[in-house]
Length: 307
Ligand code: RIB
Picture 1: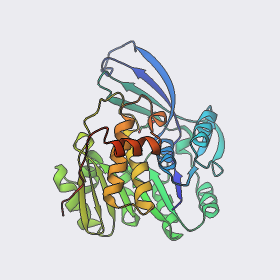
Picture 2: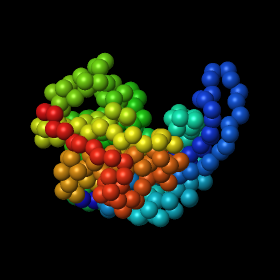
Picture 3: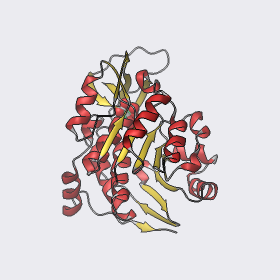
Picture 4: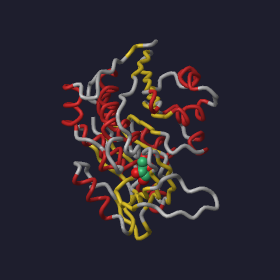
């Protein structure tokens, strides 16, 4: 099934640091890398590398030409991308010695989508396929409504979480993709184990992918719940690990793979991503993922049906 991703495009300014800069502190970084990123771009590339037909929708701003090239190089269709004179989005990312990151966003043209552009893009895409969204663009709720009117399936990766997400028409979603922080805020609960029961009750027909970092992931689909753990691999840079998981998982479930197979693919792809620096450049090829799985290079993981 083809995917239309209304997603952010960011230039990532990545600084290597010993620790994240503290309030009032001025600190020198150990290095700067400029990469192609954005949760939107990363997820388009992950889904395309996994094997999906992906169309990326966004406004490309000044300075962002390299982002379109990166999408094209990785097999994403960019024919629906619009152009604007304003600056493109960027992210300032600190990565510490443990591979953990903290990210400051500047929205740029990611926050300038118009209703006219959204209509035109949906019309060109047609009425079959899945619309993928993250929370790094404006008008996310509006796109959900318009996609639903056209009979399209909708997946939302509710990252980065903010209060706007709570106002989105989440009942229109086929897939909600959240980590434990996002899940707790959407469900309005305090404990990780309360997330799924609350969301299942509130949105009975929605399928849910809950990622739990080093604790693995849980998926609820068609009344059944599956759980997978996590490989023990060296962490170089966690940037885009979640995006890789999301793109690979969606590829799986949209292309007839079982939930178990989709979870295994996504977990393996994201384990490969955290072993490499960068955002979109850390997303592995499907062949690499399949080889790791076949040769059990990271060990074996079992997907458990827990409900
Ligand atoms: O998920 C990682 C991404 O978050 C980075 O590429 C950065 O651009 C921010 O959007």
